[in-house]
Image 1 (cartoon, rainbow, N blue to C red):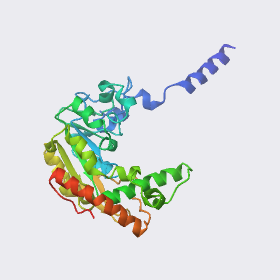
Image 2 (image 1 turned 45 degrees about the vertical axis):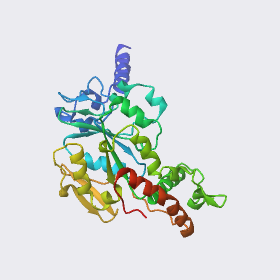
Image 3 (image 1 turned 90 degrees about the vertical axis):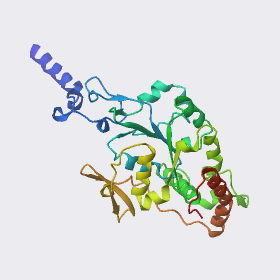
Image 4 (image 1 turned 180 degrees about the vertical axis):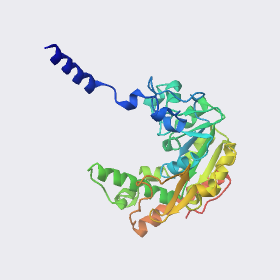
Length: 309
């Protein structure tokens, strides 16, 4: 009987014992880097590297949705003095997260060394009516990154993302024309169009931050020639120049640039760069015509122009 009880106890312990990855500190006893840690929770046996800590971001990529925010963050993360948050935190635009307080927000950031800056990106901030004031309350001198692309193309990308998300979740979908047009007229209340009114949202930000603290990245240029845009970002963030041409290579299959860093190559998720659906030419002209004046207003606000149709 004693032997039987001992055997049963052995089986129970083997079943419920912690898996090896929770027993060792790091595989091979090596010291993790902040990039290995990401912004996850560090358990008692999974300690951060010595000399690292979590900080509120020094810079935030505030948008715009479908403007290239993920590409910008991934490319900026090449820089050895950047620690990038792994996920979109939605602290300043979601009331339920903002109610958790700044300590909670800081805890969502990655571990970083003293010579690194922390960067967070949440595309929803740009179009949020409350995010500018809340970010200003946290840090009025923070440096903001805003990546924009042709607002018409951005709107179609917005629709495309929702379209595929609904398909994947077995939900009904509608043709893009049915979303863009309502009762025979352009549906200007459609969220994808509202998010493309850059002048409307920019005015809100300029009520809280001077233009000098908002660096605008050309998302269309970033896709075709990433290095010059990244070098401008380095200068804006007062980072030493570390990103070079060899960090990028053009992937013929995907049709856009991928990243090469520390001996590894990686491309953006397959959900990025999806082909747009064809849009009725009359509807497309209506959309471009409606956005044209908003684009001009935006150019006046920022003192520069883009090659948007």
